[in-house]
Length: 164
Image 1: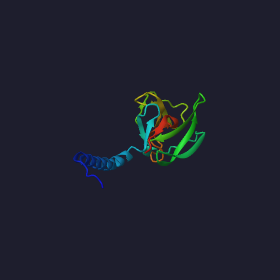
Image 2: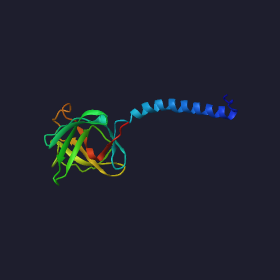
Image 3: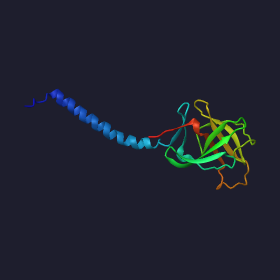
Image 4: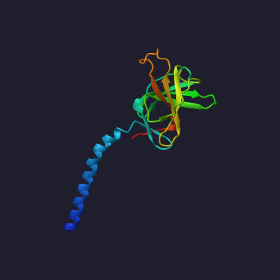
């Protein structure tokens, strides 16, 4: 025969059931909320939220040594381009329309990877790690429908994808 439950056991059982339902049903909205952050691109060094993968744009350059398409944080066919700087260092770069970076005020036209654009060094605003370059069009006759007026080139290996 099964022994009857004591009042304390009933109370503990009820607390467990109530707690279970609270946790279960409370996690549903948080799951939806978490999807809003699923396409974040983070600074690999400090985890700062630099950009969203949904802000990636295609800005092809004829000066790239290689171009490939890949999936980045759930966004398909992201253009990743390989560039070589004058010091012989190679960088894989993705381009985004905007990013939360600090950009140096010194702009340069020489040795640009995107002809017609000046460039300036961009760093993570939290840790100061070099994370890419900001490009700004210098030739106002270019049509903005074909080429963006400004964009950020982010160094792919300096980014961490936030995936759910």
